[in-house]
Image (cartoon, helix red, strand yellow):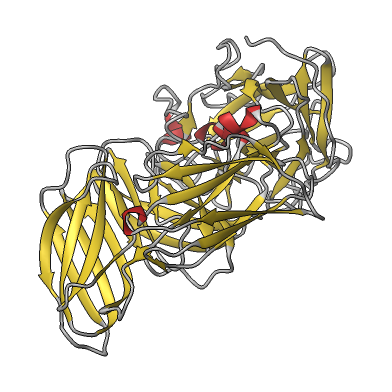
Amino acid sequence: MKKFYTLVLTVLSVCSLTHSNAQTGPNLLGAKGTFSAPFITVNSKASSCTKSGAASYNPVGNIGNALNGCSTSGSALPCSGYQYVYKSGGLQPEFTYSIIKNIGDANGGNCIKGDWRGQDHTGDGGYFMAVNGAPNNTYSNLFYQIKSIPVCPGTQYEFSAWVLNILPASSQYALAGSQPNISFNVITAAGSQTIANSGPIAYTATPKWVKVGGTFTPSPTTTSVDLQVVNATAVALGNDLGLDDISFNVVQSNIAVTGPTGTCDGNSLTVNYVVTDPTHTNSWYKWQLSVDGGATYADSTLGAQHGVFIGDSMKLPLDLKNVSATMNGYKYRLVVSTSAAGLAYPVCTYLNEYTLIVNECGALPVTLTSFTGRYANGFSTLDWQTSQELNSDHFELYKSANGQDFSLVATVKAAGNSSVVRDYSYEDHSPNVGENVYYRLKEVDIDGKYILSSIVNLALGKSSSMVVYPNPFNSYVTVSFSANNMAPAILKLTNTTGQLVFTKAISVNKGNNAILVNDIPQLIPGIYFLSISNAELHFNSKLQKQ
């Protein structure tokens, strides 16, 4: 296990979840926190009555395997000191737990514990943790923990989870004073610090999930912590609970970026970044440049810089001098952190980027309203749309394996003169063999003048990651990823408070997928989080709405 250092905590939430004014980043625990595949696997040895599929409360694959991460050093895996059970009546004894999808609903109860009611909170077909609390104080009240979570010194984090009083109010065992009472503790060699407490979680007619959590900031020398969830109520009956969607998030600064959507060859321009941070802690920053469409970034020669907040904002203008057409598609990224050292570690930083569009100016032959791409079944499809064309001659489609060196793929005849919306499409049946392919469109008029589009990045390889492009976005995105099986999935878009702002069902193909999402509703500018999930997939990505 990594060596622990003294941790100084800033406690901002006790007895309930309190949101910071800054947004939080994606859940760093991923599937480990949501009790989902691939972290949780099906327990094939579970008793038939728990998983027969005969009723809604015992679906096929209903029981997941145990949490066994406590003995694995430095892996940030969850575990429990309680006894894991999976057979009929297994949760009858105190001091036990199981990993389950549905333990009971309006149709009846599961044979593992027939009087309990509760289903997975996430709603993605995953599991939750069902716990039969300790009967008295001779037993440990610690039912869930994660050891050796790496943290960034000085960076603020939020730890939260959803908790369920699993016993209906109608039960004879639903007694006053017996309700579960959950606390979240951060542990170091110096001891334990409580960062949040739920208070007694009420019995209700239909058990309801309650969110509980708090924030903390590691000291300048702290690099890892343990997180524990304990039940303060130790009685023989009534203190039983469900736990789901454990989330460990960076409390992020909001970085807004504004600049011209395009400029002419030879011009100079200023891109304005504004960092909003009520804590004023993320005052270190650096600039990065990508010349390959965002595939890789290099630090500016200026290195780490220290900024100053005026109020809750820090304004950082970036001046670009005498830009040229060869710089079209370059991405300029601002990265901020709490320290100069933290700028080198992705888990310690927040960022936003600006894409430079450089045109050869004059009378523009074409007004291009969109240029998008998708990849499926072994070929790429590129679509673009114009709202008007003046003496346009043709379009040239280029592609690249690295986002920098482009070669001509095809030439498509243009309309010539048009004042109505026109749609164009081209299928590339020989995309590159690598993980990604980049496309760019060149619009040429009859006099040879041209302008270049932004770059479309499609993921082709068998990478386990998801690529969302463009980012920042205006009204649409293309989501590229790989899957092992063909199956339906759910795409969700949430804001920084966790509110669902858009969802849709999608069809996932075996192999590479590139899905165009062009029906996103009108959104206010800011940070959003996109997820795609089914029994196999659990992708998450942070997006910036311009």
